[in-house]
Structure formats: C-alpha cells, structure tokens
Image (cartoon, rainbow, N blue to C red; front, side):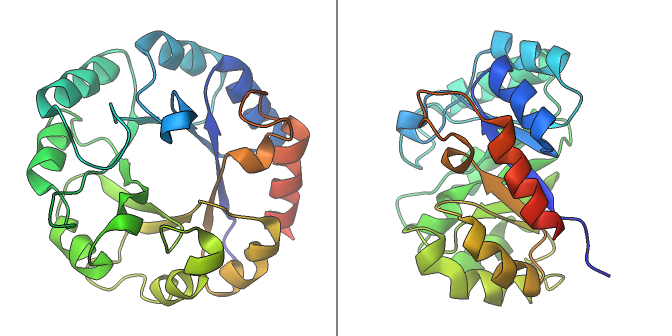
Length: 229
C-alpha cells in the first residue's frame, strides 16, 4: 500500500499559509526573502501563521545568503526567540569551509530547540560529500528530514541521486525522511513515488504569478491531486 505523500509549501505570510492549507498542504515552510533563497521570518509573521492555520509549520533559521553559518550567536538568539514565540518545528543547515557540515554551528542552534523536529535544508546539495554529511549529523536530536534536490542544479540533474538515496532509507545516516524540492515539477512525481519518496516541497510551482504574487490554493490542489493519484 502506498504511503500518503507529504506536501510542504513555502510561505511568506498569513495569506500564503491560508491558501496553502486550503489547497491541501500538509505542512508549511515559513521563510522571508526568497531573493536570498529563504531567511528567518519575523516572530510576528510566525505568530500570525500559527493563529491562522492548523497545519504544522517549519520555520527557517538562516540569517544570510549562502550556506555558511555566519554569526552563530545571532542564529542562536533567533532560534530562541522563535521557540519562545511558539514555533515548534524548524529548518536549518550550515556548511564549513571544507564543504562538510558545520556541526558546531548546527549543534549550537539545535541545543536551543528543545528537541523540536527540524529539517536540514538544501545545504546538503552543496556538500562536498553528501553521504559523509548525513553520517556526521545522524545522531543530532530532532533531525528527521533532509530537503534536497539531489543536486545543486535542481531535481532535473539530481533525480538519479534522489532515487538512489530513497532506496537506502533506514540505513545508518538515512533514517530521515527525504523531502524533495528545488526545481521540482509535477512530471518528476511518478518516478520519485515509484522509488519510495513520500515527501515533496514546492514554492514557485504554486505561485503562477511568481514570487511577488501569493500562493495559489488551486495550484496547491493540483499538486495534492497528483500526489494522491
């Protein structure tokens, strides 16, 4: 029996969140500034979304473009403020200069999340060694998901990697859910589902008017329909 697929939608504000829920999203990724590929939103936006919808929301902890941690003390403060404001799930991920995970920075942020579930985001697609990264982070509390396109270039290029990793689910370093996103299109879904992928992440794909326009509930519904097929 096929597992129901999780559909996560990137949202910037309450309007997006309401539309995503109406269209059938299972979870939200709450970010600011998609020109920088998603930064930490304000506490006010997070609070408004929590009041407006009833589905889980993962909140980005990332203060600057790129995948270096930057000011780790500022990241820790942001994470602590979001947690105090009621955020219950998070998204983060930092690389060091060697292309491996910046485990120290990740640990310092995770320490203030009180065991909350979190996603290691697409920094994994820029890692020098994906397998080594997964194994170095495997024991961190709360890490239950990797958001990945299989390649820094997107799902078109990364599809073979995604399929290969999906069949490794349950191995050491591969117990986390594979959440596929980054240039994801509806036509990718059948092959990914056949490989066992059960979580999908969309942003621009559900914004027919581009990032300056809101999420379309109808577009989200189209994804939900395909995932249920």
